[in-house]
Length: 303
Length: 315
Image (cartoon, rainbow over all chains, first blue to last red; front, side, top):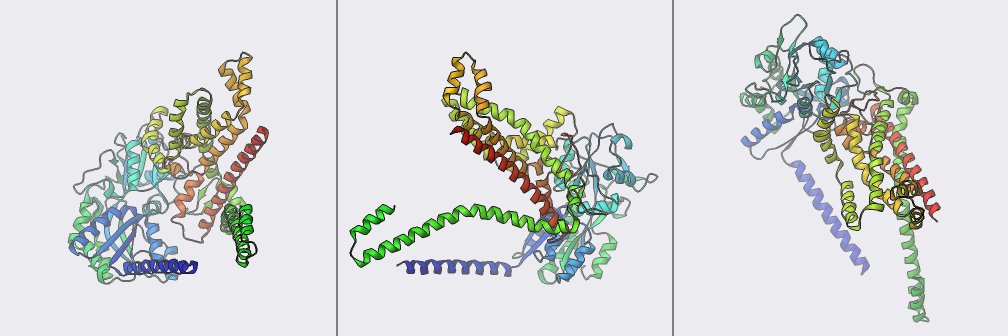
């Protein structure tokens, strides 16, 4: 009696496990494209993916955030097909990829003008790169030193897994950030913080604060930025300022894949850089791929 | 249990089957006993396992950097632009700041509430208040953290005239709310355990109810109240999500409650998700975990010792 029971249970468990294994393996076989990484890119790529899925029924694309560092780590661990990265891969990451047998393949899908946002009540409306550098390094800690009111600056930044955190540090600060900089979870959280903080300053991807028509999100002000103290200051709100390089803090938004893609993956990437895909990029407040990166994509065989 | 077995055995005495059955029943009982022993040991095994894991994961970091790197500097910056630094003093300081701040708010509120519940409130009042306090304990920490962002944050900036409220004070207020249920219900138990004769004697001697509460009830329940506070403290120091959301996460060393801070728990939560495995940074996060574990362990141990002493005193 008891032995029979045991056999019954064993049979049931093995059937259950078998079904589980079968469904898991069939899931993997399906046409599911996994995209993971940059918080700056997540909304943009999600919209591109939705448009692509509408045109190609039967294709499933899942886009998640987590930060550029998280996306690249997932690519190296083969847990994602595409890593969104708003910065270039580091040497360490390239080595780790090589060790894991992953051959990083880079493609540029859009251009971002990293926007410096402050509270609308802040009278300061432009800064140069040197002032910006010293503010985020912590050397300038009061708005009165850059022509504002006598108010302690509160710095809004990102956590270290963010591509924007790494890019802005390498491109603008060129040193460690001030230890007083608050580490926020994403672009949206920085915007929300700035809206409430009249002494705040933060850096976000342009798509989070500007619409296609160049309207700035209510509750924040975007600063004009100059290359140096003598140069004219430009705003990232106007597309031509970013495209011709007059706005000094722009960057390409990247995909990293494992080797040159084929099939559905390649189709999706081609769709992204097509005029149709680039129109969606524009609609999300970001800018089309700059000419030098169009040439780069072409050289990699994606046009 | 044994008697029943014996009785049944006596009934079947003389038959071979009966003797066999007694034997198998004894064996079964032994096995059941062992099973419960194993269950009892499980908690100790898990505790030991966690400690061993933390220690072995943290050890490579100590080996590589030395102990002084961790405890000799307040600069925590493992993903630095120039040189990685692993000082955890500012993180420990931040954790202690929010915890002590929380206790400063929660102790007077909690003990007063417990005194009200045990000595003053009517039965009906208590029946409403007690479950309400227990529900307070069940609010998820992420919800409390959200309240910190949308409610406490603007309140602090308005009241103290600072530009934003994502500060140590915000964390303290939220942690106080979270540790209140523990402090209230355990303190109330302690106050109720004070023998009625104490209070009666005090009242008979002409003391007012206030005097009786402050000079008789609370002092005689003091060890229980202290144990309640320590347990509340253990809850506060290990809390992660709430402080991660509400304290701004700036790793600077500060003693100002109106500045952003980054606690040990928030550091682990932020960085463990993105750190490459088996790197120095990875092991360093386990060092933080080990220190945190040691701190909560000591706090819980002290509260246990006090509670034990208190129960002995009762006997």
